[in-house]
Every structure is written in structure tokens, then in C-alpha cells.
Image (cartoon, rainbow, N blue to C red):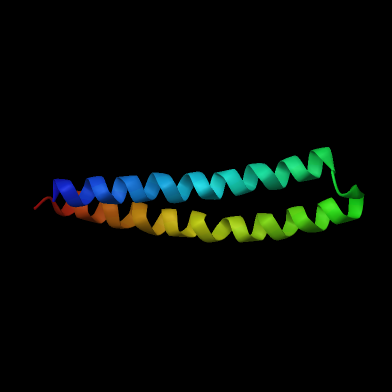
Length: 73
């Protein structure tokens, strides 16, 4: 069980960092506006929406980890 939790922990961290990194990029695009005001805003919104996919995976992995740890085999 401990090995399985470690694998899930690494996957959780990796997926969470990808999601948070995408959110950071989206916010940076809104602040810096490298593609003009309209282009940067549209791209930031698209990246912001896409960032929720890995964040949802991270939430599901965390839930499975909690259930596995609470079961305590």
C-alpha cells in the first residue's frame, strides 16, 4: 500500500504542477499582454479553461489517495 501511495503522490504532484503552471501562464498573459490586448485575453481565457483539466485529475488522485490511506490496509 505504501508503494502505491508513493506512486500516486508523484503523479498528484506532477499533474498539480502542470495545472498551476498553466494558470500562471494565463495570468502572466493577462498582465504582460504580449499579443496585444484582445489576443492575449483570448489566449489567456483558453489556457485558463484548459488548466482545469489537470487540476481536476489532481483532485481525483488526491481523493483516491485519501480513500486508500483511510482504508488502512
